[in-house]
Image 1: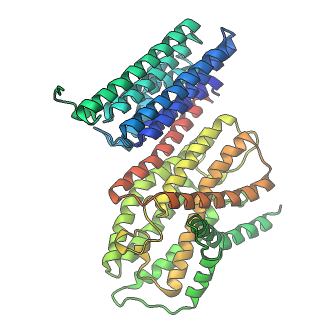
Image 2: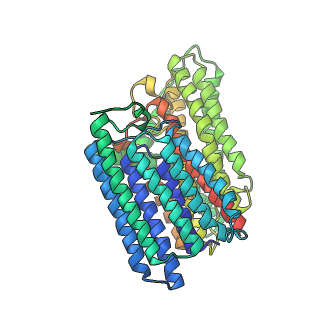
Image 3: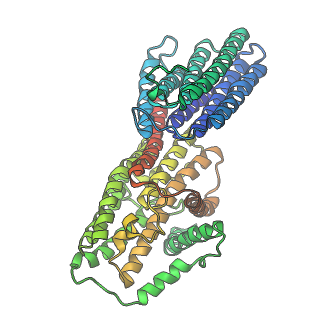
Length: 216
Length: 312
């Protein structure tokens, strides 16, 4: 039997895999929001069970900022840039989904060799899901064309790292969580602005075609 | 309830559900497109009309074209009695997972042979596409069914799909994923919308219909009935997966199961007509992508089955 936190983590990883199979940028953003909300609820489960700090406030802040704020911002960017679909660059989109399932299985073997995660399956499940999220984000960044997809992939990787930290420490101190949240928000804002600049200078945001210098 | 009564109920479902489900799909589609649409039982009326008509058979065709119909309908009825597509269907002893899958493959094999038999170019075109699709979709169906079989530690589908009391709630994602995998692959298997348009009039884009072009009269009626029966059996099978997920969360009584397993087929029919209203037929080269999503669901179901199997 899996615990509640492990079940939620596995669900987040599965939604990450669904996200890697999306051609539409907008539905990828929605799936990212679901996945982030699941990760935030895990933060709530951990801190509620350990009675450390203002659990509800932190997870609410994470949900509001990362699962609502960032998708809204990215949706606005997508609307302004007028991009809809992102066909894969190196792998076809469905194939990249199958590769991330294989990576999910790989991360199970990686997770079972971690300290503290070895032994029962239940202990390894949270670590498996978080390593799988890191892999999925990495694969998403590697196999997509649009610069906006690079941001989504980066955010998914960040979710994975955050989840691994949560799982290994059973709830981080408030100040660390706040710091991570602020960093991510700043990174997304800056990346959004950079995408706008790329669109302005190159007339497209296809990273596979960003090979030559362009001076204005 | 006695077994004989349940068999009678199953038998009447087998006779009337196929036409009714096709009717529901067509009626919902018509209402969504602001049309009145044909009556709900139009498929049954068509079948009766076709049975009374005389038959035209191409002089180039051999006995295979005629024999195919008999083989098709008899295998399909056998399948309907073996497959646990209704929760109240009494268990049979020979319903092994792989037997069912290869009986489905046998139907397809004879359908392909019969469409090649009259030497019509359109039939051969449809046969080639059907063969390609079946190669793609078969792994997804096998994986989805073996995922649920793996968690039940048996390949006997009656035992796999038997509703047992107090199933752990952690089984729900497995059933949901397997059901989604089965539903997506049965859309391909039944030549429904994202892969093939069942209402198309252009022979070049047909898959399933192109294979039946040479059939007429009673032959066509039986083939139409057989494909409608295949639709309810496959929808029923994926519906049973969804019902199991529901049963993990909210254990319903077996009397409610009778109502639920019929209404879930209707619900899936309505979902099909919604898909067929909002989506367009995919380009043929994009069809493998759609199959890949079904395969993903099945792979994830298998992964969840392996994972929960390790832990218990």
